[in-house]
View 1 (cartoon, rainbow, N blue to C red):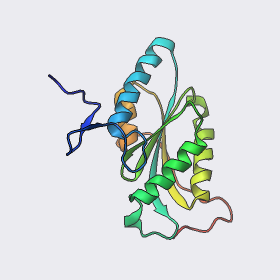
View 2 (cartoon, helix red, strand yellow):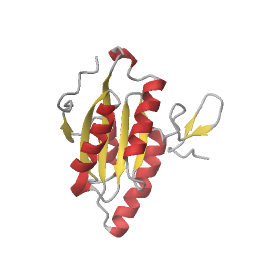
View 3 (cartoon, helix red, strand yellow):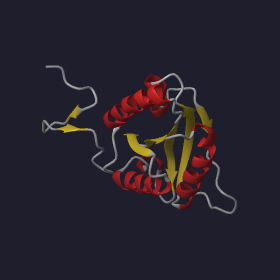
View 4 (cartoon, one colour):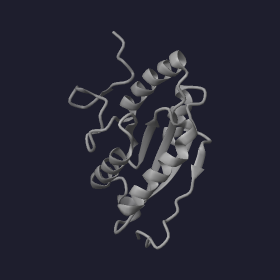
Amino acid sequence: MEQDPSHETTPGGTDSVLDEDTGLPNMFGWEAILRIEEDRCRRYGANPAIIAVEIVGVRGLAPADVSGPDVARLVADTLVRCSRESDTVARVAPARFAVLALESAAMASVVVDRLRGALAAAGVMALFGVSPRGSGLGDALRVASGAHPARWIPFELPPGQPHPN
């Protein structure tokens, strides 16, 4: 029997599509969510945006510590709190998160501004990559992994905000 590629088998033998530090979907869960969304897009003509969030620094932490579990929980909580109920947030790598912003391709910059402001207020520096759904699941996965030529938005501190490090 072939194993579903959307599941990761952990050393204990259990399947997991959730990141153990944050409870968010991991890359396997993200892939499964995107497959469902791709079908919905084909069926109904939806046009979501994919937003990649790369953590590059945190106030008071050395650069090597930005992928740790405490930072992951801080970023996850902030992204979930500032995303809309219909959006999906996933942790797709140790220092990378992805947001599936439904019905938002035209409004992606508004979503990014809200997420960027919330992360900056929490002392987190991040780069954002934005891409509409594009040609499908492959593009969305490449955006989330950082390998897609999405429009990367450089990190900028809000006026008067001290640099985190």
